[in-house]
Length: 496
Ligand SMILES: [Zn+2]
Image (cartoon, rainbow, N blue to C red; front, side, top):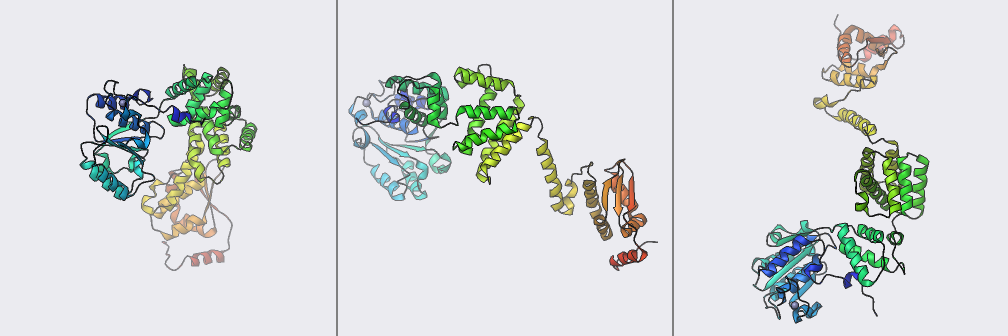
């Protein structure tokens, strides 16, 4: 006996069996009941949400003579419903991924003119339609503009943004949604019941969660889990199949992070990675776990939503009680950013470790590290700007060097070359009484005392409450002073 994958075996055959897409199914059903079938449909949405299955059901329903008696469903008994695959000449399924050329679209255009053999409509289901070439789209467009009365097109795609607007405007569009986890869990339970497989509620919930909204993915996972245990399928079996970082280690890591224990954090990460865990997966598992902790922290009916085994949930709740909501939000924010950064990281492991340590040591309140970094960046930016926009400079009044840079920016506007020279020649600092001390060479001292004292005092005074003290750094001989003055050049003149 050959094995049929659960996904194929339990593929929906009627509208009633399609799950999680009621908004679409109701419309399609009514169109059949009221004979208001359109000529072109576009089914879009994430993979595994039922686009192709719905297209196939619709294709049979429009041709089934008993559909109206069956609430719009194909009856499953007549010759139209029972002719499957290529034998049904009125339903043409094609995959644009493998047939994307213009010739193919022209071929459709010619053949669509011939009337259907058995039913009322000749239905073309084109999967992955976004893969068609530009030429093929144009050829298809011609057909969509003037379709024969018996033609019906169902275009399916996961990437609707790649479909030309001219095509979009001629189709009735349906957006398939991700299926909610509880519905997926119900669906898997039904399949296991039909197969006579025993399972725990938590095991099925874990499968549904891993399916992330896709029916096909969930059922495939259920298929893999099916044969793992000969008896009852348990939560632990599912985790084993999924290769989820053994949950216990993730819990231990989260605990280490929220108790800010550096050694434990690094040990747990090392354990997980040496088990062969990929850093991206690890980061995702940890983020999801922290999300669960947050749910346990803020929601009254948390385990109703999470559907975890009681002991796992109690562990989660205990952890949640010891952390603030702010810190949890901060942690989620940080680890979500890691996911984006992994691609560019020199060492993904180091990035992950550093983030874990950062989250551990932060209260989640104000990110001073981030604020400092931004201020520093602003300061550096202003030095690269031209003089017109230097107002952006941010002066840190606790740092004499920052004040001195601010002074320079103000001085630069005066277009006095001597001042620029002075600026770099002077060392600045606070003394113990927070007075601003300028230490300068003999030449600079002389210039400041005689010429620029007032200007400098005015500029520094804006940032500094203390006195401004000008000191000679060392005593130079008169000949050195003369030399320094000579070095300033002939253009320099002094007022008497
Ligand atoms: Zn039928």
